[in-house]
Image 1 (spheres, rainbow, N blue to C red):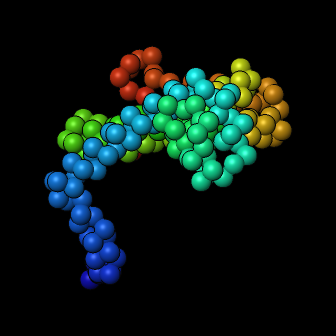
Image 2: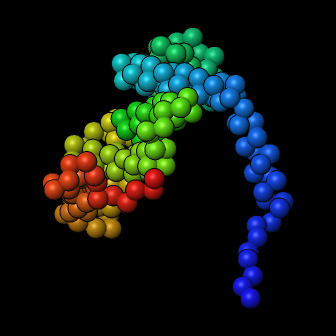
Amino acid sequence: MKKKLKLKTSNNKFFNKLKAPFLNRNNQIVLASFLILLSLYLIIAFTSFFINWQADNSIVIDNSFSDIITNNEIKNSLGGLGAYLSHTLIYRLFGISAYLIFVFTLILGLRIFGFKKISITNSLFHIILALIYIPVFIFHFYENALLSGGLGINTQNLCKNALGDIGTTLLLITCLLYTSPSPRDRTRSRMPSSA
């Protein structure tokens, strides 16, 4: 006789309690609206960062969070919080690929509103890959520190130390070719889909 495996009921109760508020349609509308507004906030903050980053950089780089959000000299269109988020996500982390965070929050909000054609898991997978790949690619080939962010600089330097300059170039080109769509089928990618 085969025994069936059963999940522990304590785990099921925890997840049921966790997802219970999101089953209510009104809560879904509030969450989706928040995510769409957050995506708009991020795109305005990121765009303002690229316009005013030199003026805000000296203020943001050496101060604490509370000093930044209360500073009146910040030039970012969304104030201190916009300057702090932009500096963290663009300058210190992902560079210009931080715009993909805006894309994902927008996709997630639209999916919660009911656009079923958008796959969250597939989008998340590709956006995470792009958040890692694009900064390294930009810094390796163009050596632009602002567009590549801290992640691009440090990861490219790690790859260059481990693989050398030619090895890093070959790795980046191989990754680009592997993730590009197949010439035989323009609608599909060779990347594994988690949808």
